View (tube, rainbow, N blue to C red):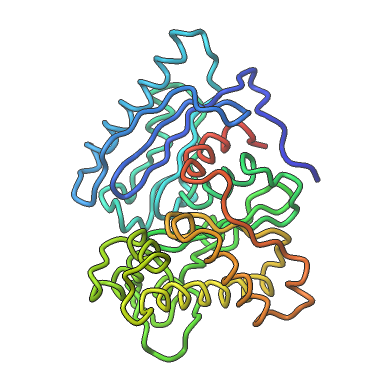
Length: 316
């Protein structure tokens, strides 16, 4: 199978809505991955469902107004939403935006703007963005691991999204990578990949050294001051945990390409990627891992926004 062709709707642009726990970004995106227009709005844990919907409508309306003023045809609206998306097209299990749980966001925006709307989990959308706009369309089994505030993943097989659990890949951030019992996770489990390598976990472990963000951790680990090389060890341990997780994914999912994205992976850069790959090859059976490429994101922070639009632009 080959990757999907651009949308046959006669339009070469789509509106992407990338929703996060603190903000939502909207963009008018072309099939070449060019952002013609961008807007943003605040979200937040305490925002009501109605307030969030109003902000989404405003952002989408601005993008649509920009397109109409320039006679640009828009194929539809794609949404990347934190949490899960159930079979009815409602938000489900969103811890970041609980007021949207049970709300049929896609249906409401479709009715409002009279355009096709597709909504997926935000990391699944990010996987699509990296696949289509990061130069990976030749990959037959493409795995995207987003390491940011939390850890999530999405996978495309022959250009189609792999759906294993609850309409997506599941929750790869909560596979177990440490059995020592020393890494309690916010999910209620223990030893999860997220508890070992996410932004919140890294800041938690590095806070005694005055670290407030993952970027500070990696900057100081590289350049100092780093008392007793403690920060470097925290960063290395996180990369090693990611490698253990990748070894598991190799055996279960058999990817040919793995891309590390998200804020933590982006800030940590090439040393983190190389250490994770080294750990993966140390733990994984060669039969499943020897031909796997492990790369850093090329689409970067825009992967979610581009990926949201790609749900329309490259829909089957």
